[in-house]
Each structure stands twice: as C-alpha cells, then as structure tokens.
Image (cartoon, rainbow, N blue to C red; front, side, top):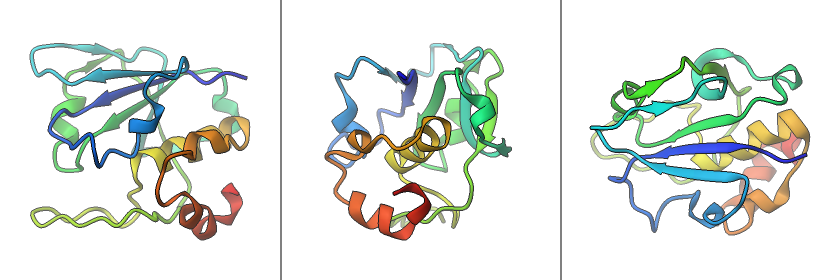
Length: 149
C-alpha cells in the first residue's frame, strides 16, 4: 500500500513549527505552497474536513488532500481549490499539540495536521508509525487515542 497525499500549505505558517515538515522529500507526499493567484485541482481526492461524512475503509484508493493552515485562514485557501474533493471527517480524537492562538479560538476537535494525516491513513490502511517520526508529541497523541496505536 502506498499513500498519495497532497498538502496545500499556507506559507504564513511557520515551517519550524509545522508538524508536517518531517514528511518533506517523501515520494508519497507532495507539498503545494498556497498562492492566492493560483488554482489547485483536488479532483477525486479526500479532503479532510470537519463538515464531511465519516472517513472509512470504503474510501481506500483515493488520494488524500490536506490543507495546512490556521482555522481562521482555511476558507480563504479552500476558495482556491477546484475539482470538488470529497469531504470526509475523522472520528473524535484528541490532539497532543499545544495549541495557543491569541486571536482565534481553535475548534475543540481540531488536530495538528500530522495527527489528522496519521489518523486518516490509519483508518484507510492501518498504522503507519513512520508518519509520526519527527513529531514531538507523537507518543502523547497515541496515548490519548489508543485506537490509533
């Protein structure tokens, strides 16, 4: 099984703090840097989104599409996405990432991008611990979510 992951990343987010940075250079993960003058095609991909139907094994075989941004900027980035990706949500999970926004309240069920990616791949194909390599809070994330361990 190989994953096919496309990540639209907001360049306003710190690369140093980005939980997905350790995935750069992997064959199965492609990063796009958001540009407000470009359009991004996500045709046939699963968009991890809190308003979608629950992700399940029935979704296997479709590429994953993640938008790595703050919750506040998410609508702006999604406005540049074409192809009507299939929205899917994850089951309730707990983040280990210490979120601290001084200007915007993060939704309670929000996860770090790497946590969401790991959970989605786990649901679709089983555990892939190598995705969490380099993630500082990996052990705590798995402890908080034993169904993903």
